[in-house]
Image 1: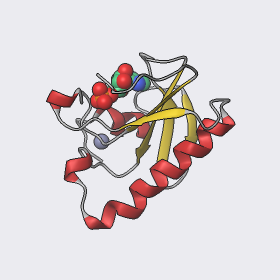
Image 2: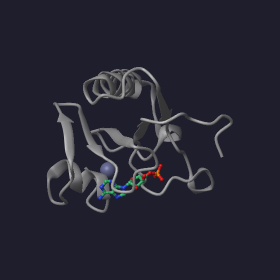
Image 3: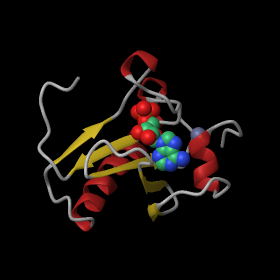
Amino acid sequence: MDNNCLFCKIIKGDIPSDKIYEDDDVFAFWDIAPQAPKHFLVIPKKHISGPAAMTAEDEQLIGKVIRVGAELARRNDIGDNFRVVFNNGEGAGQTVFHIHMHILGGRNMGWPPG
Ligand code: AMP
Ligand code: ZN
């Protein structure tokens, strides 16, 4: 828990979110500014600032973030065609420094990404 972190506050319930799923390890909610017809975020409850701040002990946890995200995509009618994004660093578009996986679906995705 980082007292200054927006996503830690969302996990705690201090800031409301449109929650999709929660268990002991992870939390998922719809993105407030969706970039696709279906766009949600999956985050670990543990505060990790981003992919580059991960340690070996976080590997299983972030693996779970990915597995749960794929399951939630199926459950929310996205199916098996979706884009997974982890932004790392301001230059890559990271604006919230609590590691989060974007899942975007419901439309065709261009490649390469911008
Ligand atoms: P990033 O730019 O990769 O750091 O992604 C941060 C994401 O969090 C953006 O897609 C924002 O739209 C989203 N976001 C910011 N604040 C909230 C919030 N209160 N509830 C839901 N999503 C949020
Ligand atoms: Zn946090």
